[in-house]
Length: 327
Ligand SMILES: [Zn+2]
Image (cartoon, rainbow, N blue to C red; front, side, top):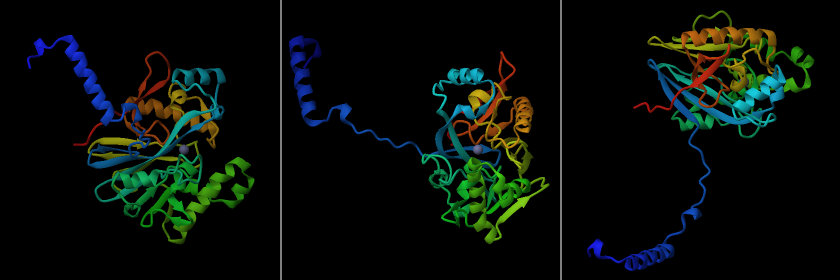
């Protein structure tokens, strides 16, 4: 049949017949069930010879009144980032798995479901989704012992990483494992002591709990990096391979929309607010100048990015990594 000879009436009849057949044999598009599930929460990149995998523990929200600064400024910065509910500012938690080729090192472990809403606690599930097993982890490095970083090391009083040594700065272990300091702490802070003490117990019993002091390098290419203020021993880890560097910075910032442009804004979680602010201000200057890649526990997943100086203010902007395939 020559298309040009078809009358518009024939075409209409044809299309109605076709529509009728289609309707009889296939469901309407709108009836397709919603799928709900998200992609697995891991993101992988290479740093020289080292493989770095960001592992998502989960997301939640925090109340902006935890931020310490000019309330009007804080609200306007949040609104600029489309965070319009001051009681529910979005926040994520992630840890970082580093395969050096000879050691599998996990830096921070998420909450393990011991702290925060039930939307957290997925780090091990995502570690498995990324192709590894908890028993393959040789070393767990903790930036500090808050429950959203150390909570993932234990479950039901047993070790989640049965072959791993767990290391953190001695000042943090001394503080959070102290029953005396815990007894004097405000009620709302006690949960952090409880998690640190419950999590450390099975590793201490197994001889796998190793607080450290004054170490230049923990394994080749992974060095502690002092970031004082957030907790008594809060420490980042500088990872270096083949001339590339990545700083896992722990809790330098919790709300990027506010603390990047205004690093002088503190947060209630800081043990020593004045020191934390000074540290953040100095570190942001340095990391923006060096263009160092950052792995951040609480910037939007995967928490990998760099800093640049803002054009029109004294502050900084977070430039997230872009999604890339590895091959
Ligand atoms: Zn944290």
